[in-house]
Image (cartoon, rainbow, N blue to C red; front, side):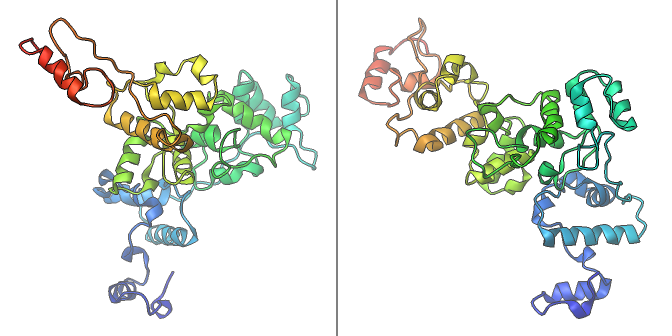
Length: 364
Protein backbone atom coordinates (compact mmCIF):
# COMPACT_ATOMS: atom_id res chain seq x y z
CA UNK A 1 0.00 0.00 0.00
CA UNK A 2 1.26 3.47 -0.86
CA UNK A 3 1.03 5.94 2.05
CA UNK A 4 1.03 9.76 1.75
CA UNK A 5 4.65 10.27 2.91
CA UNK A 6 5.92 8.27 -0.08
CA UNK A 7 4.00 10.25 -2.71
CA UNK A 8 6.41 11.96 -5.09
CA UNK A 9 6.33 15.71 -5.63
CA UNK A 10 5.51 15.15 -9.29
CA UNK A 11 2.10 13.70 -8.42
CA UNK A 12 -0.84 16.01 -9.08
CA UNK A 13 -2.52 17.73 -6.15
CA UNK A 14 -5.74 15.85 -6.86
CA UNK A 15 -3.90 12.53 -6.75
CA UNK A 16 -2.14 13.44 -3.50
CA UNK A 17 -5.41 14.53 -1.94
CA UNK A 18 -7.17 11.32 -2.97
CA UNK A 19 -4.44 9.04 -1.65
CA UNK A 20 -4.23 11.02 1.58
CA UNK A 21 -7.98 10.74 2.07
CA UNK A 22 -8.31 7.09 1.06
CA UNK A 23 -4.96 5.76 2.28
CA UNK A 24 -4.45 3.80 -0.93
CA UNK A 25 -3.89 4.54 -4.60
CA UNK A 26 -6.41 1.90 -5.73
CA UNK A 27 -9.55 4.08 -5.62
CA UNK A 28 -7.64 7.02 -7.11
CA UNK A 29 -6.49 5.67 -10.45
CA UNK A 30 -8.14 3.97 -13.42
CA UNK A 31 -7.00 0.85 -15.23
CA UNK A 32 -3.60 0.97 -16.95
CA UNK A 33 -3.48 1.08 -20.73
CA UNK A 34 -2.61 -2.61 -21.04
CA UNK A 35 -6.02 -3.66 -19.71
CA UNK A 36 -8.16 -0.57 -20.24
CA UNK A 37 -9.88 -2.00 -23.31
CA UNK A 38 -11.18 -4.95 -21.29
CA UNK A 39 -13.42 -2.67 -19.27
CA UNK A 40 -16.23 -2.47 -21.79
CA UNK A 41 -19.43 -0.48 -21.30
CA UNK A 42 -21.27 -3.58 -20.10
CA UNK A 43 -18.57 -4.26 -17.50
CA UNK A 44 -18.35 -0.68 -16.28
CA UNK A 45 -22.13 -0.43 -15.99
CA UNK A 46 -22.04 -3.02 -13.21
CA UNK A 47 -19.89 -2.42 -10.10
CA UNK A 48 -19.97 -6.15 -9.37
CA UNK A 49 -18.71 -7.01 -12.88
CA UNK A 50 -16.02 -4.32 -12.62
CA UNK A 51 -14.66 -5.72 -9.37
CA UNK A 52 -14.81 -9.28 -10.67
CA UNK A 53 -12.94 -8.26 -13.82
CA UNK A 54 -10.19 -6.64 -11.76
CA UNK A 55 -9.83 -9.63 -9.46
CA UNK A 56 -10.33 -12.58 -11.75
CA UNK A 57 -10.87 -11.67 -15.41
CA UNK A 58 -7.96 -9.58 -16.69
CA UNK A 59 -5.58 -10.66 -19.42
CA UNK A 60 -2.34 -9.05 -18.25
CA UNK A 61 0.07 -10.35 -20.87
CA UNK A 62 0.84 -6.85 -22.16
CA UNK A 63 1.33 -5.24 -18.75
CA UNK A 64 4.71 -4.06 -17.47
CA UNK A 65 5.81 -4.15 -13.83
CA UNK A 66 4.39 -0.72 -13.03
CA UNK A 67 1.00 -1.57 -14.51
CA UNK A 68 0.93 -4.86 -12.63
CA UNK A 69 1.68 -3.08 -9.36
CA UNK A 70 -1.43 -0.91 -9.87
CA UNK A 71 -3.56 -3.93 -10.77
CA UNK A 72 -2.29 -5.89 -7.78
CA UNK A 73 -2.94 -2.93 -5.46
CA UNK A 74 -6.53 -2.84 -6.69
CA UNK A 75 -6.92 -6.58 -6.13
CA UNK A 76 -5.53 -6.26 -2.62
CA UNK A 77 -7.86 -3.34 -1.93
CA UNK A 78 -10.99 -5.31 -2.82
CA UNK A 79 -9.74 -8.47 -1.13
CA UNK A 80 -9.04 -6.56 2.11
CA UNK A 81 -12.55 -5.12 1.94
CA UNK A 82 -13.97 -8.67 1.70
CA UNK A 83 -15.77 -7.69 -1.48
CA UNK A 84 -17.91 -10.70 -2.48
CA UNK A 85 -17.17 -10.05 -6.14
CA UNK A 86 -13.43 -10.44 -5.63
CA UNK A 87 -12.75 -14.17 -5.31
CA UNK A 88 -9.43 -15.42 -4.04
CA UNK A 89 -7.05 -16.15 -6.91
CA UNK A 90 -7.22 -19.78 -7.96
CA UNK A 91 -4.24 -21.98 -7.18
CA UNK A 92 -1.76 -22.50 -10.00
CA UNK A 93 -3.04 -25.16 -12.38
CA UNK A 94 -1.59 -28.64 -12.20
CA UNK A 95 -1.50 -31.33 -14.85
CA UNK A 96 -1.52 -35.09 -14.36
CA UNK A 97 1.62 -35.68 -16.39
CA UNK A 98 5.09 -34.21 -15.89
CA UNK A 99 7.96 -33.59 -18.26
CA UNK A 100 10.92 -35.95 -18.18
CA UNK A 101 13.84 -34.69 -16.13
CA UNK A 102 17.03 -35.77 -14.42
CA UNK A 103 15.11 -36.96 -11.35
CA UNK A 104 13.95 -39.98 -13.30
CA UNK A 105 10.54 -38.72 -14.35
CA UNK A 106 9.55 -40.61 -17.53
CA UNK A 107 5.92 -39.68 -18.26
CA UNK A 108 6.68 -38.43 -21.78
CA UNK A 109 8.85 -41.40 -22.69
CA UNK A 110 6.20 -43.78 -21.35
CA UNK A 111 3.53 -42.06 -23.42
CA UNK A 112 5.66 -42.16 -26.57
CA UNK A 113 6.26 -45.87 -26.05
CA UNK A 114 2.51 -46.41 -26.26
CA UNK A 115 0.02 -48.42 -24.23
CA UNK A 116 0.27 -49.74 -21.50
CA UNK A 117 2.48 -46.68 -20.80
CA UNK A 118 4.80 -48.59 -18.52
CA UNK A 119 6.76 -46.31 -16.19
CA UNK A 120 4.24 -43.44 -16.19
CA UNK A 121 3.21 -41.96 -12.86
CA UNK A 122 -0.16 -43.02 -11.48
CA UNK A 123 -1.82 -39.68 -12.18
CA UNK A 124 -0.41 -39.56 -15.70
CA UNK A 125 -1.41 -43.16 -16.40
CA UNK A 126 -4.99 -42.43 -15.34
CA UNK A 127 -5.16 -39.39 -17.63
CA UNK A 128 -3.65 -41.19 -20.63
CA UNK A 129 -6.01 -44.15 -20.27
CA UNK A 130 -9.01 -41.80 -20.02
CA UNK A 131 -8.29 -40.21 -23.42
CA UNK A 132 -8.34 -41.67 -26.90
CA UNK A 133 -5.59 -40.88 -29.35
CA UNK A 134 -2.20 -39.24 -29.11
CA UNK A 135 -3.52 -35.73 -29.75
CA UNK A 136 -6.08 -35.90 -26.93
CA UNK A 137 -3.54 -37.48 -24.59
CA UNK A 138 -1.19 -34.53 -25.10
CA UNK A 139 -3.60 -32.39 -23.05
CA UNK A 140 -2.45 -34.28 -19.95
CA UNK A 141 0.57 -31.95 -19.93
CA UNK A 142 0.78 -28.23 -19.40
CA UNK A 143 3.29 -26.03 -21.25
CA UNK A 144 6.95 -26.97 -20.78
CA UNK A 145 9.22 -24.44 -19.06
CA UNK A 146 11.00 -23.62 -22.34
CA UNK A 147 7.88 -21.97 -23.83
CA UNK A 148 6.05 -20.93 -20.66
CA UNK A 149 6.79 -17.20 -21.22
CA UNK A 150 4.36 -17.32 -24.15
CA UNK A 151 1.55 -17.96 -21.66
CA UNK A 152 2.43 -15.14 -19.25
CA UNK A 153 -0.65 -13.26 -18.11
CA UNK A 154 -3.06 -15.89 -19.46
CA UNK A 155 -5.33 -17.97 -17.26
CA UNK A 156 -4.32 -21.60 -17.73
CA UNK A 157 -7.21 -23.96 -17.16
CA UNK A 158 -8.84 -27.12 -18.39
CA UNK A 159 -10.45 -26.95 -20.83
CA UNK A 160 -8.17 -24.23 -22.14
CA UNK A 161 -9.51 -20.85 -23.18
CA UNK A 162 -9.60 -19.70 -26.80
CA UNK A 163 -6.65 -17.41 -26.03
CA UNK A 164 -4.55 -20.32 -24.76
CA UNK A 165 -5.44 -22.38 -27.84
CA UNK A 166 -4.40 -19.50 -30.12
CA UNK A 167 -1.15 -19.14 -28.20
CA UNK A 168 -0.39 -22.84 -28.69
CA UNK A 169 -1.23 -22.61 -32.40
CA UNK A 170 0.54 -19.39 -33.30
CA UNK A 171 2.89 -18.18 -30.57
CA UNK A 172 4.71 -21.35 -29.55
CA UNK A 173 7.57 -21.84 -31.95
CA UNK A 174 8.59 -19.64 -34.89
CA UNK A 175 7.83 -21.33 -38.24
CA UNK A 176 9.91 -20.91 -41.35
CA UNK A 177 9.44 -17.64 -43.23
CA UNK A 178 8.38 -15.76 -40.10
CA UNK A 179 10.27 -12.89 -38.56
CA UNK A 180 11.63 -13.84 -35.11
CA UNK A 181 10.15 -10.58 -33.83
CA UNK A 182 7.07 -12.40 -32.52
CA UNK A 183 6.38 -15.83 -31.11
CA UNK A 184 8.19 -17.81 -28.43
CA UNK A 185 11.32 -19.42 -29.83
CA UNK A 186 11.18 -23.14 -29.06
CA UNK A 187 14.66 -23.98 -30.31
CA UNK A 188 15.86 -24.54 -26.74
CA UNK A 189 13.14 -27.13 -26.05
CA UNK A 190 14.08 -30.78 -25.89
CA UNK A 191 12.34 -33.41 -27.99
CA UNK A 192 10.39 -34.60 -24.95
CA UNK A 193 9.36 -31.00 -24.23
CA UNK A 194 8.02 -30.54 -27.73
CA UNK A 195 6.20 -33.88 -28.04
CA UNK A 196 3.16 -32.75 -25.98
CA UNK A 197 3.21 -29.32 -27.66
CA UNK A 198 3.13 -30.94 -31.12
CA UNK A 199 0.31 -33.17 -29.90
CA UNK A 200 -1.63 -30.14 -28.66
CA UNK A 201 -1.21 -28.40 -32.03
CA UNK A 202 -2.73 -31.48 -33.65
CA UNK A 203 -5.51 -31.69 -31.03
CA UNK A 204 -6.52 -28.05 -31.54
CA UNK A 205 -6.27 -28.42 -35.33
CA UNK A 206 -3.68 -25.68 -35.62
CA UNK A 207 -2.64 -24.69 -39.15
CA UNK A 208 -0.03 -26.98 -40.62
CA UNK A 209 3.46 -25.53 -41.15
CA UNK A 210 3.33 -23.04 -43.99
CA UNK A 211 1.95 -19.57 -44.63
CA UNK A 212 -1.22 -20.17 -42.57
CA UNK A 213 0.87 -20.71 -39.43
CA UNK A 214 1.85 -17.04 -39.71
CA UNK A 215 -1.76 -15.78 -39.93
CA UNK A 216 -3.10 -15.49 -36.38
CA UNK A 217 -5.57 -12.69 -37.15
CA UNK A 218 -9.20 -13.27 -38.08
CA UNK A 219 -11.50 -11.12 -40.20
CA UNK A 220 -14.46 -11.62 -37.86
CA UNK A 221 -12.81 -10.73 -34.55
CA UNK A 222 -9.52 -8.91 -35.10
CA UNK A 223 -9.92 -6.85 -38.28
CA UNK A 224 -12.80 -4.64 -37.01
CA UNK A 225 -10.78 -3.75 -33.89
CA UNK A 226 -7.64 -3.22 -35.97
CA UNK A 227 -9.56 -0.79 -38.20
CA UNK A 228 -10.69 1.18 -35.15
CA UNK A 229 -7.16 1.15 -33.73
CA UNK A 230 -5.77 2.52 -37.01
CA UNK A 231 -8.40 5.27 -36.79
CA UNK A 232 -7.24 6.07 -33.26
CA UNK A 233 -10.52 5.29 -31.50
CA UNK A 234 -9.17 2.33 -29.49
CA UNK A 235 -5.77 1.03 -28.45
CA UNK A 236 -4.09 -1.57 -30.63
CA UNK A 237 -3.93 -3.57 -27.39
CA UNK A 238 -7.69 -4.10 -27.72
CA UNK A 239 -7.19 -6.63 -30.54
CA UNK A 240 -8.83 -9.79 -29.16
CA UNK A 241 -6.24 -12.36 -30.27
CA UNK A 242 -2.94 -11.94 -28.47
CA UNK A 243 -0.92 -13.62 -31.22
CA UNK A 244 -2.55 -11.27 -33.74
CA UNK A 245 -1.57 -8.24 -31.67
CA UNK A 246 1.99 -9.53 -31.34
CA UNK A 247 2.26 -10.08 -35.08
CA UNK A 248 0.85 -6.64 -35.93
CA UNK A 249 3.17 -4.78 -33.55
CA UNK A 250 6.14 -6.80 -34.82
CA UNK A 251 5.26 -5.57 -38.32
CA UNK A 252 5.13 -1.84 -37.54
CA UNK A 253 1.44 -1.89 -36.62
CA UNK A 254 0.44 -3.36 -39.97
CA UNK A 255 -1.79 -6.41 -40.38
CA UNK A 256 -0.73 -7.32 -43.92
CA UNK A 257 1.65 -10.13 -42.95
CA UNK A 258 -0.61 -11.43 -40.17
CA UNK A 259 -3.74 -12.52 -42.02
CA UNK A 260 -4.66 -14.55 -45.05
CA UNK A 261 -6.97 -13.69 -47.92
CA UNK A 262 -10.55 -12.64 -47.19
CA UNK A 263 -13.29 -15.05 -48.21
CA UNK A 264 -14.37 -12.78 -51.09
CA UNK A 265 -11.15 -13.56 -53.01
CA UNK A 266 -10.01 -16.79 -51.35
CA UNK A 267 -10.93 -18.97 -54.32
CA UNK A 268 -8.49 -16.99 -56.48
CA UNK A 269 -5.57 -18.42 -54.51
CA UNK A 270 -5.59 -21.90 -56.01
CA UNK A 271 -3.19 -24.62 -54.88
CA UNK A 272 -1.14 -23.90 -58.00
CA UNK A 273 -0.74 -20.23 -57.06
CA UNK A 274 -0.05 -20.97 -53.40
CA UNK A 275 2.53 -23.57 -54.36
CA UNK A 276 4.32 -21.32 -56.84
CA UNK A 277 6.02 -19.17 -54.19
CA UNK A 278 5.66 -15.66 -52.81
CA UNK A 279 6.41 -13.73 -56.04
CA UNK A 280 3.42 -15.41 -57.74
CA UNK A 281 1.23 -14.91 -54.69
CA UNK A 282 2.08 -11.21 -54.58
CA UNK A 283 1.54 -10.91 -58.34
CA UNK A 284 -1.97 -12.24 -57.73
CA UNK A 285 -2.59 -9.86 -54.84
CA UNK A 286 -1.52 -6.94 -57.04
CA UNK A 287 -3.10 -7.80 -60.36
CA UNK A 288 -5.20 -10.92 -60.00
CA UNK A 289 -8.13 -9.97 -57.77
CA UNK A 290 -11.70 -8.88 -58.33
CA UNK A 291 -12.96 -7.22 -55.16
CA UNK A 292 -16.52 -6.34 -56.23
CA UNK A 293 -17.98 -8.68 -53.61
CA UNK A 294 -15.59 -7.65 -50.82
CA UNK A 295 -16.58 -5.68 -47.73
CA UNK A 296 -14.86 -2.48 -46.68
CA UNK A 297 -12.82 -4.39 -44.10
CA UNK A 298 -11.81 -6.97 -46.71
CA UNK A 299 -10.65 -4.25 -49.08
CA UNK A 300 -8.73 -2.48 -46.32
CA UNK A 301 -6.70 -5.64 -45.69
CA UNK A 302 -6.14 -6.24 -49.40
CA UNK A 303 -4.95 -2.67 -49.87
CA UNK A 304 -2.54 -2.98 -46.95
CA UNK A 305 -1.09 -6.10 -48.52
CA UNK A 306 -0.81 -4.35 -51.89
CA UNK A 307 1.01 -1.43 -50.28
CA UNK A 308 3.43 -3.47 -48.15
CA UNK A 309 4.32 -6.87 -49.53
CA UNK A 310 7.63 -6.97 -51.40
CA UNK A 311 7.84 -3.19 -51.18
CA UNK A 312 4.38 -2.59 -52.59
CA UNK A 313 2.75 -3.35 -55.93
CA UNK A 314 3.81 -0.13 -57.68
CA UNK A 315 7.41 -0.29 -56.48
CA UNK A 316 7.85 -3.89 -57.62
CA UNK A 317 6.53 -3.08 -61.10
CA UNK A 318 3.12 -4.72 -60.79
CA UNK A 319 0.75 -1.78 -60.20
CA UNK A 320 -2.66 -2.70 -58.81
CA UNK A 321 -5.09 -3.82 -61.48
CA UNK A 322 -8.50 -5.45 -61.19
CA UNK A 323 -9.68 -8.61 -62.92
CA UNK A 324 -13.32 -7.55 -62.61
CA UNK A 325 -14.98 -7.41 -66.03
CA UNK A 326 -18.07 -5.51 -67.05
CA UNK A 327 -19.55 -7.17 -70.12
CA UNK A 328 -22.30 -5.21 -71.81
CA UNK A 329 -25.57 -6.83 -70.70
CA UNK A 330 -28.68 -6.73 -72.84
CA UNK A 331 -30.31 -4.12 -70.65
CA UNK A 332 -27.29 -1.92 -70.01
CA UNK A 333 -24.80 -1.68 -67.18
CA UNK A 334 -25.90 -3.23 -63.91
CA UNK A 335 -23.67 -1.41 -61.42
CA UNK A 336 -21.88 1.89 -60.98
CA UNK A 337 -18.42 0.39 -61.45
CA UNK A 338 -19.36 -0.83 -64.90
CA UNK A 339 -20.99 2.47 -65.75
CA UNK A 340 -17.81 4.39 -64.97
CA UNK A 341 -15.01 2.06 -66.03
CA UNK A 342 -16.53 0.29 -68.99
CA UNK A 343 -13.33 -1.33 -70.28
CA UNK A 344 -11.95 -2.20 -66.83
CA UNK A 345 -8.63 -0.46 -67.37
CA UNK A 346 -8.65 1.10 -63.91
CA UNK A 347 -9.22 4.58 -65.33
CA UNK A 348 -12.30 6.61 -66.18
CA UNK A 349 -11.61 8.53 -69.38
CA UNK A 350 -12.81 9.46 -72.86
CA UNK A 351 -13.16 5.82 -73.85
CA UNK A 352 -15.56 5.25 -70.98
CA UNK A 353 -17.52 8.41 -71.91
CA UNK A 354 -17.89 7.15 -75.49
CA UNK A 355 -19.07 3.78 -74.18
CA UNK A 356 -21.64 5.49 -72.00
CA UNK A 357 -22.88 7.62 -74.93
CA UNK A 358 -23.18 4.49 -77.05
CA UNK A 359 -25.67 3.11 -74.54
CA UNK A 360 -27.73 6.32 -74.43
CA UNK A 361 -31.37 5.52 -74.26
CA UNK A 362 -30.84 1.99 -72.98
CA UNK A 363 -32.14 0.80 -69.63
CA UNK A 364 -29.54 0.88 -66.88
